[in-house]
Amino acid sequence: MKGGKRRGKQIVTYGSLILLSIAFSLPFLWAVSASFKSLEEVFMRGVWLPMPPRWRNYAQVFSKIPFHLFFLNSVIITGGALLGQLFSSALVAFSFARLRWFGRDFFFILMLSTMMLPAAVTLVPHFILFKSLGWIDTFLPLVLPSYFGGGAFSIFLLRQFFKTIPTDLEDAARIDGCSSFRVFWQIMVPLAKPALATIAVLSFIGHWNNFMGPLIYLDSYQKFPVALGINMFKDAYSIYPHYMMAASIMALVPVLVLFFLAQKYMVRGIVLTGMKG
Amino acid sequence: MNSRGHWRKSVLRNLEGYLFASPWILGFLVLTAGSMLFSFSLSFAEWDAQTPLREIDWVGLKNYSEMVKDDELFYKSLYNTAYYTLFSVPLRVTLALLLALLLNQKVKGIAFFRTVFYLPSVVVGAATAVVWSWIFNPSYGLLNGLLHRMNLFLNWIHLEALRIPEPEWLLSEAWSKPALILMSLWGLGGSMLIYLAGLQGVPSHLYEAADLDGASAFRKLWHVTIPMISPTIFFNVIMSIIGSFQVFTQVYIMSGGHAGGPNNSTLVYVLYLYRKAFVELEMGYACALAWFLFLVILVLSVIIIRSSALWVYYEGERR
Image (cartoon, rainbow over all chains, first blue to last red; front, side, top):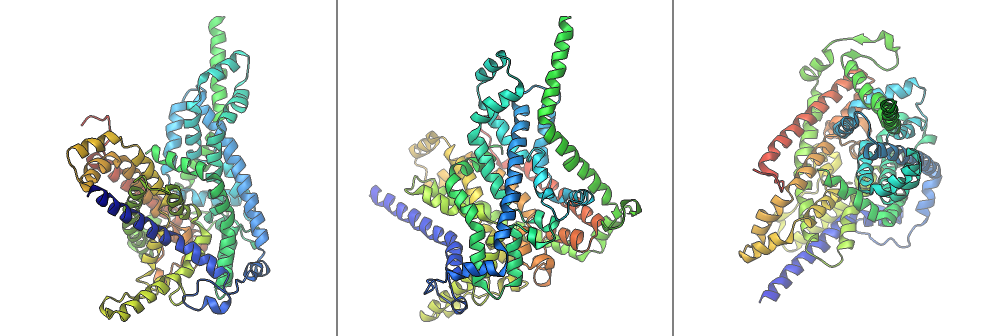
């Protein structure tokens, strides 16, 4: 009797999970399917398995727009910003977690409160600042700000991690005359690798997906990252949805690959986000 | 001598602390505090970012009064954003909780399901917005294709009365916002993960005690699970509201740039701000809009935080 009830419950649970996962993956599957269709198939209803699959669509994207260039731009912007975010947020987090200085706790609270500030408030001043520096239509406004602490969230996450590292190692190193920078670089950073990996992954995805920044700061399309390029493609070639889908799939691939390689780190990052609430 | 050495050491220690924190402190001074000050002053001026800054027109409260008195699009964008938030946030928060509850039942293959639900929220951006704008295509899109099939089936079993309309989605004034809300639900995986972590922190002895008292599954959910994870719900609600008030990328792409969809029906607040600043080059007005947004988010957050005393339960806190 009880077993039957549990079985019924299980069927309901798995049934809804399977239905929901179909719903959640349908957009992906449909985009992949559309990306292999011919133009006629795209405008036919109910075709899921295009025959034969048009691999050519993917090549066509490159002949319509300099997709490889967009890719390269994305890699440069993302890589540059990611390095800055990792290095500077680790430095600052180390200071907040392990050094004692006047006003530290005040600055820490101040830093946390900046998370509440809508980006819109600083949008115009940033634009004017970078414009007056002559940085419009360069990668600098997209990369350089990451070198100034890399955002409250990554500092916070790293600071929490540094706090959990026992002081014994640090004390021993200090008795041997290690400077703070060596403590940071040779003890803290190697021990914080999992936390740094989390930040690296989140930062990569954040910068890869960034749209508004490039939209505001870049003018010439040779400098566009993938996110902007794909939007340009959508506007210019909306009559070729199958190419549009192929381009979208290609734009998603780096993030997807990273996701499957580093899901562990991402899940941890997201869960930590919730913990502070 | 000794005290002087001590003093020197303390200065050095402080200096070191500031040195390590200096990237953030510098960034804060210029990119946050300085920018806020600048933006606030600009909100009392008219400036197109082209003419030299010294020829700026100080207009006092004109931007704000124009916004409140004459600007229909300001109200429209506020309405659109409120509409989007009002539907998207409750739906997201409850659906994410339901998914997390389903996954928390020690199911087999949890890793697989978790990935499927979480993945969309990771990739949400320009590329997925392009995909979704094709999904919403009225004639050839996935969504109306499915609805069409369903309607054919309903016809076939003579239940024409239940036929579902096949809307024009992004092309229609009435359906463009629901389309955006639907798409936003696809990205609820992040909230779901946070719930899942919260659920795993609920001590099992509470459920065992409830079982002993013969509590039904629903009562366990209502009287144990929900109170215990209410801090997590609170966090997700606040974050979703702040996020949805600032939605931009998906809307920009799906409503054809700064055009804002049919009859500005998807002109959300930040999109309007973008249009003012970077299309119409009204920098001062855009700053005024930004500060109003800040105020709205602040007030909403304070209301929710205040109300949280009524519905958020913190263990170890005396009542």
